Length: 106
Image 1 (cartoon, rainbow, N blue to C red):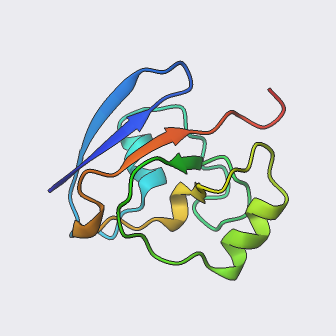
Image 2: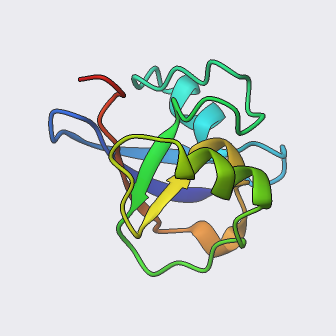
């Protein structure tokens, strides 16, 4: 089990405990904890409704071409932007801190 800190859109901090042996991604974890992450495309890097800002120095996988393309057409992108659906949970993510990005159009 790992622990991930998620700061929601109103600034509330949530500590999420997550297994690393179920092939889950960050979007699925947030949805399991009923955080306001839509995940409309089901984790295909096609919608950006799981957009987060990574606020810690954990080792993360490189961005795929699909993730880069989606972030190129997304609102509120920063240098630390990632799609939660593309961040598959693993032991290197223990202690990860992310902040949910504003919803597009708000």
